[in-house]
Length: 306
Ligand code: COA
Image 1 (cartoon, rainbow, N blue to C red):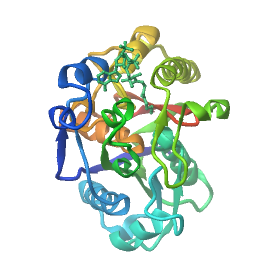
Image 2 (image 1 turned 180 degrees about the vertical axis):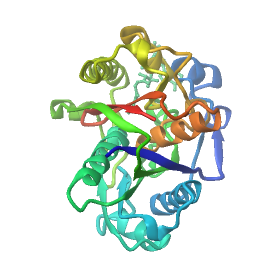
Image 3 (image 1 turned 30 degrees about the vertical axis):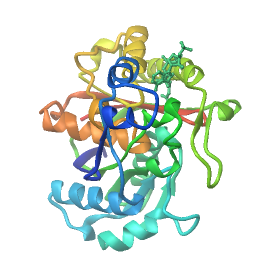
């Protein structure tokens, strides 16, 4: 039994904040932000559960299904609506699902962790036929808009994927990793803002992602040349380029949305999958590598036959 992604959906708040607009209130400029991060603008606004609901409904529709077809909901977020209940409870109600629902927080690696968990659930005896996985964030609520070290990077949005049992498509290998010793380089306290040591995060991210990609490729019995489509976490285009240089993953095969969305944490990978789908890159049989990393630090890579 194998599993495929049957449908993808996205949601971005209407309000766009350009680099030039940011430069009106903090000491920065469009050229610096583009050169150092690849970001040109970010969407800002919305509530995590509302963005998740919108993306989830679109993914179900894109798969040609109805809410009754979904057997499990996983919402990955690091910006939940409330302390409790889980954001997935709100999304479950608002989409009109009747299945089980839970949240995962692995910050920017959340979608990879959720994808792997969903896959595992579907393989369990009596497991669901279909799982809706949604990455959704309202990071603008926890960004200090006076801190030029972080305000330039983050944005809001959501992306969703319906996974279903099908003879087409399968996961070939995955790697999940975490190093809790590195918490202090990227964190936000309850009620506080994101605090980040940018250079250190950059260095660690390149190392962690490159290592994770190599482990996953080795487990799959593949090399970087076997990968047709690369879907990396969208934190900084220079991190993506550095990982490409280290691992041999082709930049030509790498899909990015960072210029238009900034870093939307657990939403970046499904948002980038949607972009790849729009470009016609996600064809049955293609080998797709998805990789994410973030606070924790936590990271993960999945190699998938589409
Ligand atoms: N605008 C203009 N200048 C800025 C600036 C900004 N927004 N932020 C920093 N600078 C200045 C610094 O003060 C420094 O000036 P100096 O050389 O006179 O001291 C210079 O630019 C270089 O600063 P530095 O912090 O070394 O820049 P950088 O190349 O590391 O880029 C980040 C900063 C934040 C873009 C980069 O470190 C980064 O993306 N890190 C990873 C963050 C990340 O991915 N987080 C999420 C993980 S999921």
